[in-house]
Amino acid sequence: MFHRMNRLSLQFLLKIFSVLVLHLLLTHSCRGQSQLIGPSQPIAATVDDDIMLPCQLQPAEDVSALTVEWTRSDLDPIFVHVRRAGQDVTYIKHPSYKDRTSLSIDGLKQGNISLKLSKVKLSDGGKYRCFIPELSIQSFVELIVVSDAVSSPVISLAGIDRVRGGVVLQCESKGWHPQPEVLWLDSEGNLLSAEPTETVRGPDYLYTVSSRVTVEKRHSNNFTCRVQNTNQIRETNIIVAEDFFQIQPSSSSAIIRLAVTLVVCIGFIVAVFFFGWKWRQSMIKTKSCWDETEGGGNKKLSKSDDPEMHPLNVVDTDGETFTVTTAVSEENKRKKEKKNKRLDRKQTNADRLLQEEKQNREEEVKDLKNQLDSNQNQVENKQAECDLTELQQPHEENQRRQRELQTLKENLETKTKEVQYLIISTV
Image (cartoon, one colour):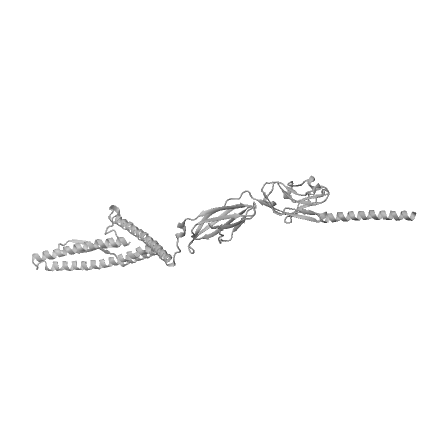
């Protein structure tokens, strides 16, 4: 009897143990099948929005007493929100998420560990991990923050491609986040081959993009610039006038002819201005010389006051004398040459031309001096002849000789005035 009771007790204990083992196995099996379910597509949000990052435990069970972690691997520290032993842990949280994240207590009891994120910033964009360490299960949620400051593309004419006979168009758009791409399309929606897109990211995390394309004349000169990312699309059309495509590539010979023409025109203009300036300077100097010689009073040049002149007396048939002005002496000539040399050193390129003109005038002065000396000799010879033959020749012959002598005197006076003017103008 006792033996039978012990046997029954042992069987009962074995049954209880079997039930416990089966319960533990079932519980472990169920927990091993638990998983966190997140969204299959990225979550999009606009700046300053309040959003929910979904994360659900399946099958649902109470996780309010378990550890829940939300992290981002690109941050330091990586923790966005941490809850342990029923309390939020804030000291290890990233500063940028302070007072902006929360978990629902009621939701945790139902296995819902979705994270609420308030006042979304552009910097919040990224990949988040939802993790329960005790169950060793995790899920990922990608957040895309979209800028609300996107500007429509602006198309402008950037230039003319003379080699291809095309038009260069430029498209620019600002305020993008995340980074967009730029596409060029023709009127039929075909993609055009464009230059690499230039992208600049500002301190506010917003992108500015710019792209160029060279288009050639088509049956429809309607072109489209499209800027887009995963959440936004902006586009602008432009119709290029046919006049811009009528510019043909210029040949090298035409360019050379144009360059030569420009050089000749510029040279002609410079020459006109230069000779005009020279003529004006010459007129001013000539006027100054005449003012000094004929202005009257103290400015009038006197034969006797000129230090470079000395009088030469000539006696005519009547016994009267007249004065002819010639150069003084070699010493004054040397002084004059020294003075000219000093002026030559100080003159500019334009003044050197004037110096050549002065040298030519000096040669003319020398020639006139020689003629003056020759005329003077003739006057003296005629005067001598008149003196020797005055009593021997008839009266008519004397009158003829006197007329010749008078003519020579007039020529001599004319030459003398020319010499005086030339000498004054060369000083």
